[in-house]
Amino acid sequence: MTIQRRPLIACGVALLAARGAAFGQIASKVWRIGFLSNASAPDGGVPAQFREALHVLGYVEGKNIIYEGRWAGAQIERHPTLAAELLALKVDLLVAQGAPAAAAARRATSTLPIIAVFAGDVVETGLVDSLARPAGNVTGINDPAAVLSGKRLDLLKEVVPMAKQVAVLWNAGDNAMTLRYRAIERAAQVLRVRIQALGVREPDDFSDALAAMNRERPDALMMVSDALTNLNRQTVIDFAAKNRIPAMYENSPSVMAGGLMSYGVGNDEAFSLAAEYVAKILKGAKPADLPVEQLNRYFFFINLKTAKALGLTIPQSVLLRADEVIQ
Image 1 (cartoon, rainbow, N blue to C red):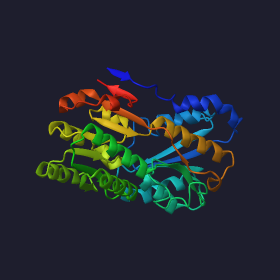
Image 2 (cartoon, one colour):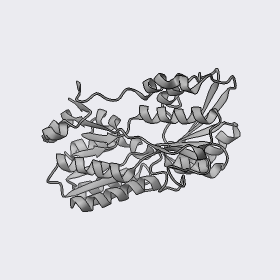
Image 3 (tube, rainbow, N blue to C red):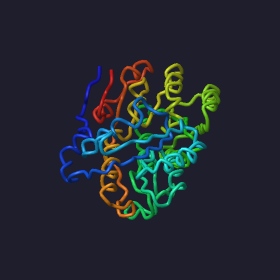
Image 4 (cartoon, rainbow, N blue to C red):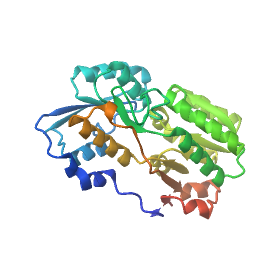
């Protein structure tokens, strides 16, 4: 059973519907949208939240919009080829999911509009010059890694106050995720926590990371979410459960799958904002003139069933801050 402690914000699609008229009538041209992702292809292809958000804005699939998706399956080396395939299809713009996808898209074209989503800190990774003035052909959504990473570690420390060593599992082959790991390192110094660094670059590395935790058991675990770690998420969740290691994740699907806690953005809101960028660009706006936006709403999920299995009592002060408590 899921108990909602605080009302979640309405789905981004509903928010779009309330002001969809502001975008006016949709021209009769059929637009071709390229979607390049570092993840594996979900059922149905291009994420449903994104397609639905554009539908609300007047873009009907098969009528005035066509989607072309390419998926790297966490294999970063595939991005240049996939980006070239999308450009060959004469897409009108590219939506890039994940930092490797956005970087590959930017290298592939300096003229076609690119919207980056779930791409980390877009200034630190060099995707844009600044949030207010992106310059070039890239805009999109920023992920303030330093703030969020510190908040996640702080929440984890509240739940496990005696934790002295925290393992951090991240994709060391993704610059944006490494920046996020560095932010955790800085936060750990403030909280006087030792970090057990477990960088991975490919699926085979996960067995080594888990073996390292078996040799030197951490008091808690944090997993930085990207396509590679998400593909291996259940392995990590099962390991944490078996070894009774409290873990903090970045998104709610990890908690739904048995993880202890997560704190991060909602996919609906992020994809709805990406759809707004698409609509503005298709109506003539240039990426350089569209400031990069930062989502200002983050969701905190707790799985009480997992907490009980771990022998943890979640402080009431923490429970009251949760958006959803699963039990």
